[in-house]
Image (cartoon, rainbow, N blue to C red; front, side, top):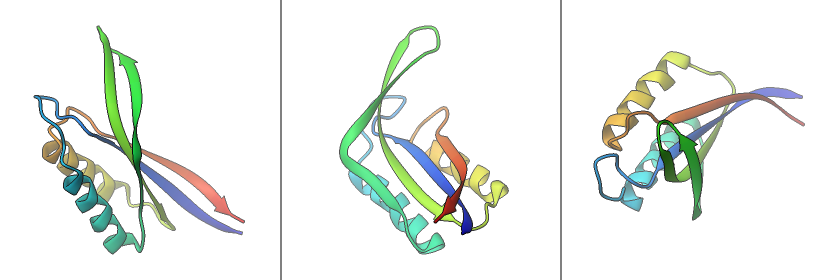
Length: 103
């Protein structure tokens, strides 16, 4: 049994200040992660939709990108999240990390 980390990036398809994120920009993220970690999966067939409430109900269209890594470098992922927030014109991008076992 091998311990690993599953890292999920919830990437928006719509920019905070208007406009749509080009699919090529999502592909660049996938390519970057595949190059760095040896593989990445983007679930792009249909955008997922999320609802969340701050003061008003907000609807998000997102693509989920997933990477599996043996060790988790939290500082690198924090820096990468900040970079993605700027590139995607977002207040915050969610990156979720889950420890997993491969059987």
